[in-house]
Amino acid sequence: MTQDERWIVRYNEVMEFLEENHRNPSKHRIEEHDMLNWLKANRKVMNAGTMKPERVEKFRKLLGLMEQYRRKNQYE
Image (tube, rainbow, N blue to C red):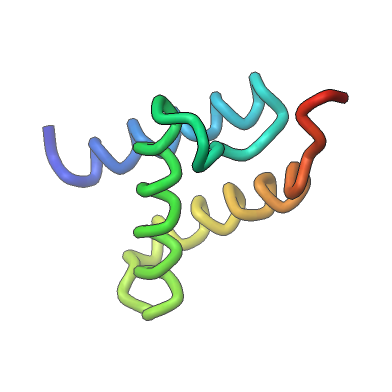
């Protein structure tokens, strides 16, 4: 599996999580740490300007979806 394929798999995993749970990955749940770490690492790469152009578009879409669920009350 190439690096691009792994990136797409992880991207799809995070998108499915957001669509199913209607919230962002939590830093308090151990099973969600991998997704959170992937998001933080890719945000750093994007902000540094070293992310591949085809990934930037998809990642910005993901960040937009995350912004919708920002500070979502877990009891709603």
